[in-house]
Image (cartoon, rainbow, N blue to C red):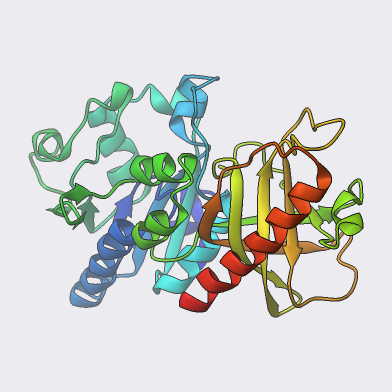
Length: 311
């Protein structure tokens, strides 16, 4: 897969294309991109995925309430790498770019700059200024039909039409198992291990404190989770707490992410790790004492091992 940041490097390809944010690269996205690959083979043209960064709502509404990414740009590109796509074009989304009308977007961007051969669109795809353009407008804006169009039907799981927003809502409610079903993989965080207060060590549960540097990345709801941590090519089982550690004498004023591993001995400080959320065990609560917290941690470990054994 070749990644582009300018249309100039795509000159002469006449690709089969689709476009969107693809945040999460979830099962609905994967169905759409599977069809993109089929069309690429059928038409003997390279496949091109067009995506945007940052999210349009981040540009048009500087402080969008509750909008967090399922994937950073690097994470999204890594997931797309698995899907047999030939080219990915990352368009810097700016206010000026957003002011193109639907017909201007088609004529200037899709036809003149990209010279696409065929466009595959999702069931709810909109484009152009104020998202006023839809698939029906594509035909109206190009009477000479410079490229073909196909609209994909909605991808549903049960009665739910899958979307990135639904998955965000699940994660913000702590429902990581259902989110994993919709994503097609366990939700994950990337971060660096940083030093903490060593309270967990004194309780017999040493923790690695995770610093997720991207403030726009979605962190699941506060609570305790069964997790798998990936580090240096190996995977380790553990349990993770997201929250403010209310049982401590001086609770945290900022959110912390701490993971205790069951089968690891060593030092991870300043190392990059990836944590996969497998199951939610309980809410974060305040205990009467550190001894009561310690007793609960033993119960949490048993529950986490059971949850991980089922996966």
